[in-house]
Length: 263
Image 1 (cartoon, rainbow, N blue to C red):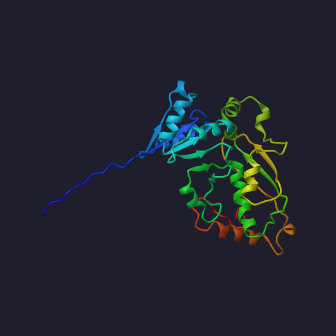
Image 2 (cartoon, rainbow, N blue to C red; image 1 turned 90 degrees about the vertical axis):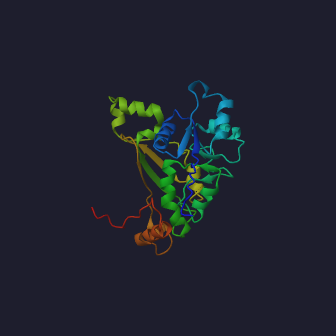
Image 3 (cartoon, rainbow, N blue to C red; image 1 turned 45 degrees about the horizontal axis):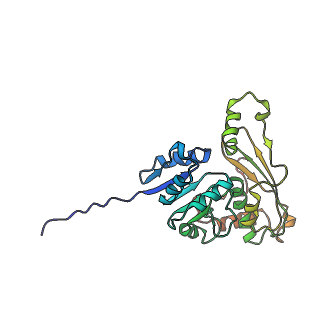
């Protein structure tokens, strides 16, 4: 009586392993996680990065495993995971439209965020496709954009998305060709197109033109639409209302007014 009992419980840290930790994406993930006191990052010795047994040990020991690998290597890594508790987040293109994988855009549709919380296999979306899907999915769901509509998209992005080699080329300087924006993917078979179709509901392959610019990171994507090809009576205000309804309450998406106040 008059006393008290104090029980201290140490919070268990979440363990994370990054398979492909030396690449651009892997290094950036390490940078973010290093600032967290509630996460233990599992590291692989440099001389064992291609050792399947050691990779398997770390993958299965992790609560969360990030795959920052080429597509074929990502598929191999998934095959090494036998621990049902390990959550895999794949940054490659390998599983973005694969059955059994949850697409990593929580704002995609109602219930998507809860699905991601439950998922053990998460496909991280591509940069261009994230912007494209964010623009088109609300309009398709609202019936404003027909699923059969043929659309075009142009996206200008920084050079960091090209990986170490491209980063080195731009940072070295001295090449006048790199000073101007450069279109690429001219064969219209960009690796993001399948997810662009799968998660917007579009039935026609979009004509997608990616462009790399002389800046490190960030992108701006635009999709021009002819009002005459949309739902009868649709105008700019209807598009904005569809965006506002779809993204109501979302923290990371801001719907701007129809008129740019800077103009």
